[in-house]
Image (cartoon, rainbow, N blue to C red):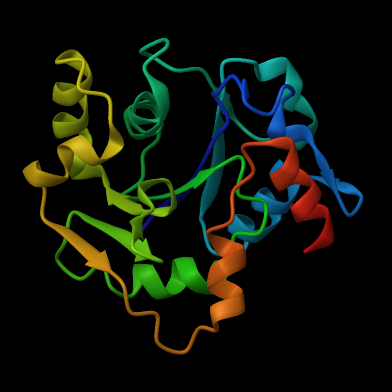
Length: 192
C-alpha cells in the first residue's frame, strides 16, 4: 500500500509570533525532526505550505493549499488531491517529537476503516491521524460547505478511534502528541 507522509505547514503561527516549524530544537528545525521520522515509514513525503520559499531547504515537494485560508482540512485535501497514494499519514508542523512507532501502531489498526484517529489523554488528535484516499470527496464536501473543523467529517466516514496504545510507553505518547503553539511550549520543547 502506498503511503504518503503529509506535513501541514500552512498555518500563520500567530500565537507563537514566528514560524513554529522553523524553530530550532537541538540544532535542527522542528520540521526537520518531523521529516526525519516520517522518512522511515512513508513511500513519499510532501509539505503543504503557502510559503514554499521558507521550506525549499527540505528538498521535498511543496504544495500550496487549493482552498486558501481554510485551515488544516484544506491541507489534507490538497495532499490527497495532488498525490497518488492510498493512505496518508498526517503530521502538523508544530509536533516536533512525532514517533514513527506510534504511526506504525495506528497503521496496524487501519483494517477496513477509512481513517484511524488517535484519542490520547481524552483528546482527539486528527492531525496525527491516518486517512485513506477515499475520504477525499467527503473532505471536499465539508470544505465547500465551509465546515472546516477536521473532526467535522468523521461522522461521514468509518473512523477507528484508538485510545489503547499497547507496547508504547507513556513517555513516547506524551512526546508524540506534544505541540508548540506558544513561546512557553517552545521553551518546554527545548528541554524535552
